[in-house]
Image 1: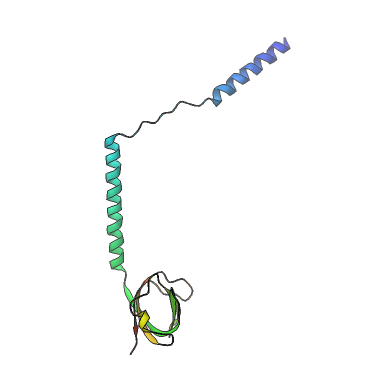
Image 2: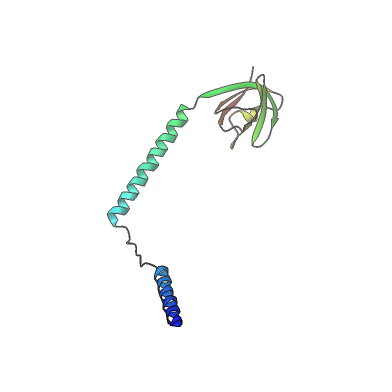
Length: 132
């Protein structure tokens, strides 16, 4: 009797385990033409909105300037020492007027963004002019 009960319990456990492990047959329907068009329209509107927002942020950035002596000029940056501190200013393309100055010149740098002696410069250098 005990063997029969043991076999019955083992068979029921195996059946339950097999039932729990079965995967449901899920199929996903391809999006309809209307759904695809709606998604594309929404994406286009979002991209246009981001572009407008980005352009308005650029125009809202205030332009500032700092006057000081150029300490070092490299291919991607220069260092300027002013009475307020020493700043490393980086750029992707050489700003207007940088080729006209050399190390040791007094210059006025026009830029957007924030200057910091400890944090990296994240703004844009608009121009470098030799100070009079």
